[in-house]
Image 1 (cartoon, rainbow, N blue to C red):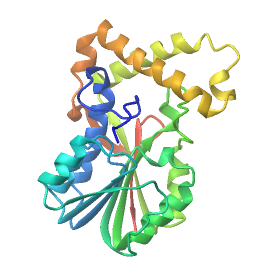
Image 2 (cartoon, rainbow, N blue to C red):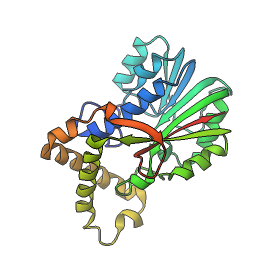
Image 3 (cartoon, helix red, strand yellow):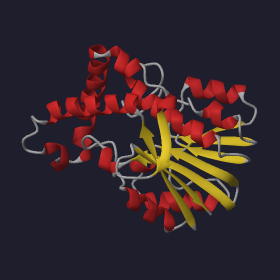
Length: 259
């Protein structure tokens, strides 16, 4: 099945995605510094992080509900890479205590039963194994994203993880001046659009009826920003992001939980 290319699934192909793509790539780069042994990824996306993680793993298994030609090619080329097409949770067919690391980037906000999701990850990790999870920081979201079932504040995600895990390290993804120039310009652009929502429909309507309009407007806004200031968008690099202790002003939560 072809990958559904919404604004939720970014890649290097569309230049207007660069701000989000580099931020996503940064998570893989930081994850690659930590992982070893048997690694499970939940949420393959377009597959741009496969090689980065697989090169550090003895065995790398990656899960998504969609597959595409890029993923198939990477799996074929990598002898230690396996792809499983699956909707989760649960992690069907995956044995208890079988992985050293689980990584899941920008996925948990889409999961209806997030408690079961975390429990299943804990189940498949070995004793001493670690979960590396990223998700948007609700405090820095520019508007409601109807593709997300929920977003988390800094203490909320920690509390959820501590229901299953013994220890949680709470880090956040931040951007330097280059990144934040784009963020504030984007924030103003979104405010210009949402000022017409005088009935506050973005928060009062059910998610399903907002998803397609949101996606169209999100994609249109990204392209408009690229056309208005190509350099501001295109100059952002993965190295313009950095990790520090999670705070209200981080862009993403980057948490490491140990079993």
